[in-house]
Length: 495
Image (cartoon, rainbow, N blue to C red; front, side):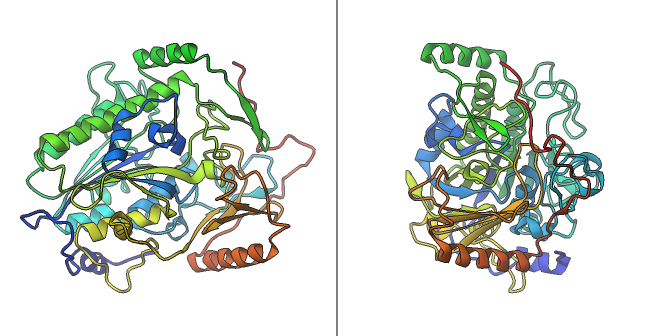
């Protein structure tokens, strides 16, 4: 897992690639937006007919929209670590969300489940080669705003290569003060005027950074707290969507996923307001790129860290036709929105169906900045620049290993996607599910019994990958009692 400072410097100052730079040969700026708990189907450009996201829909029209983009994990911290390092989460040791006092670890586990979850590292190692370290060493000004959730004090953004940190700390949500409204009670973000809205504040800080650094290469990483719980919206936006729901006569519908109810229709007014506020914040930053005259030479990436909440914690959204949501290895838990704009390189209106994943961002940004890794630098992802230029990538397998019980009802397991095939192996009972995603995007028809050759092939590749990345597995829970209520169940509140 560890990499020396020497390798980091070599990586940062590797041979420059003459690609996509402006007329003055200045490397491109990088603006990376990361939403929290935003499902792929929460955007209009991905099919939502209830939430309104005009800024992100325009971003999709101006650049490339990926239909088969994935998070490295169905929960947040592992995906964030993967984006930062270009590694699969298993190499960082962060394989579950980081909980206070390791409350979700095996030593303190008190839920009645078949297995004890695997250990989970509670911080990103300081010698990890983060995007910020590499770009800073290459002459970029680096800025972080929003949710970090990759370690406590001493392991915050300013300790991992960012010149500025506005709001990133150990917490996984806006849980201090008035939460999404000032005063925030955030140790890394000064309070604004009473009632100031957090996503707008984070966008304002990012826009200020862009203005101040428009004459040099910059890396701005805006990792929104939105749309993570607590479910809170501006009152005007909440009322807008209450009215819209009434006007559309939209009725809530529920299905069942394991031991949980699952929302099947997007109609939650508060959540809709949160999505629109996120969209407005993205628009504010994009407008500043235009105003600063750096739009054409700026690579903009927008994605999310896991699927939308559909089986827990307010049950606010539906990922349909994708199955389940956050915390599950089904498509609703890991398939993400991914929009990329770079006017000098990416043709407007491109739709890309190649499967890609979180570790791909590190080599993509590295290549865009004109840097090449040294031969022994571990990079698990693949640069997406060929795809963005209209070329193809060789077919490869994408894998997931989640040896934990999340808060959303899912179970420990692993998955692999190769071409149209996706296999899930569940650790509680070693059962296998196999889906043909071309014909069955909703993952309703398990073909494992009909396709034993595919099962054998994919399972062998998955197991080889698990060994290569050093995957850690859960173990039997000695306190499991089949006569007690299941630790995976949760009752949805009435209403």
